[in-house]
Image 1 (cartoon, helix red, strand yellow):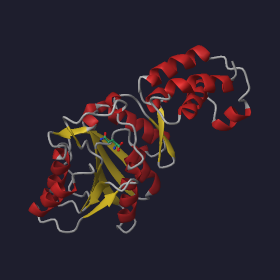
Image 2 (tube, rainbow, N blue to C red):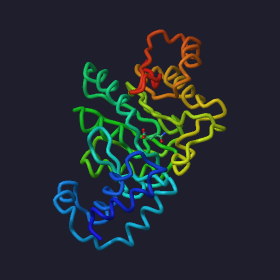
Image 3 (cartoon, rainbow, N blue to C red):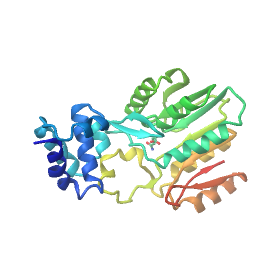
Length: 271
Ligand code: GLN
């Protein structure tokens, strides 16, 4: 069977789990052969030797298991990151959080020390370390596996010297008093929300934020206010704006703004 035949044959098995089945089969083939897309298209009529292995991966993907976990990588902000099951897969809308953060950081006096709560795979901290000079980041997570993965990504992108990884439940092990910004994409989904099938494979402790969903967000807002940390940027759920807005008021936080995602849903805020 040629590569072309394989793409045709196996894409029909992925129709129910993705709207780009052929593309996904190509990605699996590139993964199995360790080749890029230019090579793939120049060799589309070549014989493909790993049909059995491909079949196995296609079956796994057909259960809705995320492609990123199969191939062990995902792209974020134009860069490649290692991903592993047990840690959240990067989402494109989180790039907006990084954009907003860069916008504020560009006007701040350097060196600057910031805190990321819930570093996960490390996408946010690594991007900021790559794009901002004179920055020190304390990156915490409650999940030791996430910290390990984030360190691998920091190493891959050569920014280990700019990020200190630390096991901490929210602010618990953060005692510094010279942090000028907190950034976080915390779990913000309500515990009883029925997740789409593909998201079921991702860690619950990276997704669910409590009974209402915004509990961890509020904890972060409260800690930022109590500790007088000047800036806070968070991603949030599309329906959490009103409740967070009134929460800000109880802390006399008056300067804040919300931003929307690519689909025009409310998706985050800056304080
Ligand atoms: N900071 C990581 C991300 O944005 C992890 C977030 C999380 O696990 N809730 O992907």
